[in-house]
Image (cartoon, rainbow, N blue to C red; front, side, top):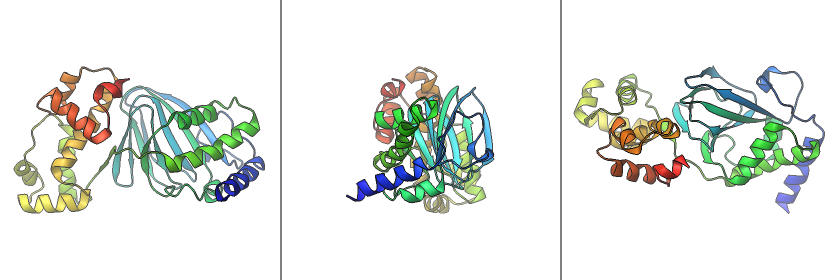
Length: 276
């Protein structure tokens, strides 16, 4: 009954607002108020969208390509056919690691306030895109369905987000400048064998202090963080069709088997499954 009442209230609000249109600019820069809006963009590799924010919440989805999003002191790698939720007012920047087909759906705070089932709407988080979620995003961005159907799609999409499986593609960056210097070195040279002693020297700390402070600020040990950074850094190479053995070497793994095992442990599927 609660879900039915939520659905009915949301549909009433949506029907009272103009429908979204295919757009060439962010909805925040357009006049008028809409409950939701869809945006489709193609970006060549290396495209960077500088730090900005929206008054609306947004679901960023990659049809093709890999995005790197900086938000909430964290790097988020968004592989193809996956998505990232950004709450209203969240500053963020986006870098396209390869040619990217981007789809974004924006939701007004007023509409989000009606969606109590979407309990994680205030958190930045990456998520797996189910077939239903993907079709809803694509249809809303195309804007070719009847108006009433699109209105119901928008409310259903927010409801679906609540049950979407989270994707561990976040890479928290330490706030301390010395620790960030060491972390940035790993990101710049993922193939290098960075020992704890080396990283402690870069941060001008003892190994013990470096280990303790890095874990406290990043929420995981340096070794776990380094491995996650290497895997996330390999996603654009995989999306571009790179050879698994060559990618394993380029990202500092001893063998393709160890790379595949670490990849599966983090993401839940193999590099070959990622390609498909």
